[in-house]
Image (tube, rainbow, N blue to C red):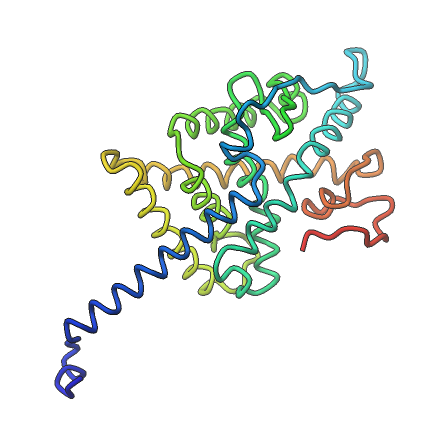
Length: 279
């Protein structure tokens, strides 16, 4: 390369082509890695949910004569037990996002803890509808029971997102990349390595943009639409954490799995035991 090329910022054509090819290959590798991680560690893929038999959730020990607090405890314990199997799956998915494990470990944990519910909702949307949320084993929690656990406004927002996301009919590859974008968010409270997270987030956004453009070339609005939903999804995650304040205050009445208690920072009576960790 000549000195003039360096001085004036001119890059020879063959160098530009080589750089573009290298960048394209790196982006392709990222898309493939994330799609494979999703297929390996998500229980809500199209293949795994084909022919799934749905069944209503059975909440034993609950009746209309009980107070709202007692009902809430019973409902939430069952909901938590249904949600818990997805925790290690999301963790393993996150660890296989290229460069994720290069982030500060505290930032990795924050992304997982604060983003878990959001990623799970993206996954579960495929099986869910207006009548309730369906888990990977086919158990369906009705909208009525969801409202008893949370509140009508929050539940309405959940089902609005589910309806929107289902109508997009995204492939598993696009869902995988969107899940990665949702998880790797530099704006989360407590993040220390903003620059590294921001760089990874930008790469993931570009990967998602390319995948969506390839799968839906005529739907130019789709990628901007997905981006416009990110704040709403993050708001749902924040609202979910706010609802968990009640359970942290009443932890002595709960019997939760160690993983669920850890990911949502809920104390346990046997919290001294080190039987399971999320990372």
